Length: 475
Image 1: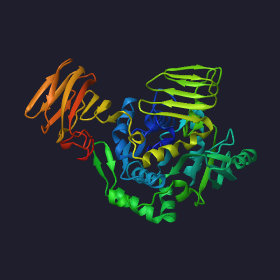
Image 2: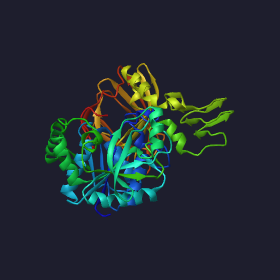
Image 3: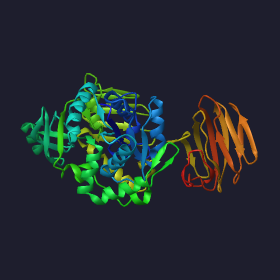
Image 4: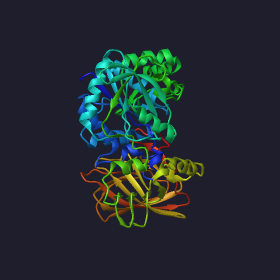
């Protein structure tokens, strides 16, 4: 399958897995099912199907995480396409299709995979893709319908129509997430399959159908790609052109209306990892049906999910609950109501709460920082800089900083001076002075930063130079 090009969509926010998944660090970048992140597992799964490196489609905020995560598993990307703004899956796939036709070949088949799904049986998935590729090469837009194991109300369904070949059928219809009684009837009927969000699409045919069914979307995507530019390792379509596209899913835009749609049944241990109950389903359980991650002690608890990140969770006499703890938030929910976590996230967002977007540990292209203490007129952070990492040359109007190195070696620019700091050494960065921090060593640099001043917000940065090409007001 040398003409199969993985297209991995990584634009989601994963709000239903809050508080672990957040807008600034969503679930595809987290190790939730295996030791790898969901994105890394998706890339490796794609490599089991085809030798072609993937096209990654993501957003501006996550661009460095995308690049770093595939580097950590010794993989490369055909391209990393940055959506100038979120416009859902139909325009995202159009960008990938246009890139593939220009840089890969006219016979390219796009294996479209969300970055945040899990699949247990890779061989079954590979076999299904192989069968679907024959139909795709003959002029069909293929999707994959997961054979349901239960009357699930959290998934949409695809109804299979007439048989095309073997197990592959025409798409009869798409169905929205049903009520429980309706979902039970679908499972009993046998011709309704879960909508997996996985596709195998001839790039040329997808664009032809998009032009026919959604000409305005096709035109904006084509214009955006015609005026795209390279920026470091990233491919940037034109923002003004792309923003004119409607925000719409590939199902609504194309698959529900095309006469060239086919569906391949899939039985491979698939999950969209869309809620904490899905992780309970996927993980190994103790004799009482509990899943425990981190520092957890239980007595007389059954069929529950516990995840500790920072502190001990002790449970007594609990049934069918989800308890998830992070450094700054705790979620407690009945297992049957975890689909409503998004309601809590929207409520927090309306209140302007920072817990929606960021963890206490915030990742940046050079490393990470973590707030340890935040009080009036002073703040304490732990900063970790990757080997070779360099923060921007910057200055602050309202705060001074003290840096104490606890591990590794720092190269410090402070005004006109450039000097080295070793472990247990410190320096002072006065208010209003240009400064920069770099790690010239081969091990991570860790330091404690004490900020003091009248305003400590991250937007008090005047940026003069940045290795990573970030916009002036980025952190």
